[in-house]
Image (tube, rainbow, N blue to C red; front, side, top):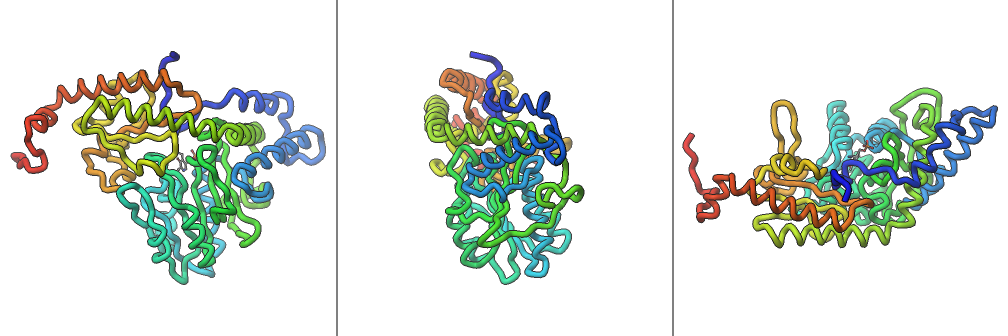
Length: 403
Ligand code: PMP
């Protein structure tokens, strides 16, 4: 077994060797600018970009003319929200999103709010799911966009995108979906899901960092966007800037591989995830699953270990790369806003750990992680006076601590 163990695949993924192989000649041999129209270097680069565009669109059931390459999903989300709001300003000034979106949607929506746009942030239930009926009820005559993610990056839950897409269509409102965590992991089809704009990024599906895409529907309806980056008019004027040819080639290859292996890989990851969940919950008490138990992406497991700080647990597991539900900032240790939106208490949110299984994880690694997590949680609980009190039958919620 190779150490350290990487089990943080929602954060980013290792680049697949097949992807690297395909990218290399675009650094050293075909290094032309895809916009150079008068020599073979440019033509070769352009040809590679267009071939990759086909692959990147196929995975979402779209047409290659409907894709804009960006620097990643953060930019795609910014472009979708800001681009639609600016373009459709005459039609309305209201957008709908929900509280567990990625920061690149939430913070963009908050910035738009400051410039006078009304934003509805819908709640989620205790499983982390949005109620499509809430979406329906939030729509007004001034609504121009609904933005709901496909798969949550912390708890892996899959939102009811098809139902929301249907509602958006019925009311003639554009529907944007941040599908960053879902592409290549769960089936996505922009037609059956009624999606008009979709964000994704290569580095979550074993491609390189710094390259992403925004799908923009061309018919039924034709979506128009105001660019947020002005310049040479690349990507049909919607995103200027010299194209990242090796990145785009890698993104295309990553999508092609994902399409081929998705079914088998999902089944394998689901079985590894269940092995991990069972292994941990069978050997430790007071471990709680965060997010819907079944409606979640196969590789995601998010657990709270009562009486243990997630950060301390990770410190005790230095040879395993995991992620905790606390965001360390300089002044505060904030528990995850996603878990809090589900109604998870701040204590249990602080005790959460995200296990992100991916293509290169093995059963042997899962078994090692089960043992190390169990051992470390037991050790930390042994040192915890609160755990001792709880074991002795004290109801900690009733305790009145001296001020
Ligand atoms: N949306 C979601 C749901 C994500 O998980 C991420 C990455 N953590 C992003 C957007 C941003 O993607 P990128 O890193 O490509 O900007």
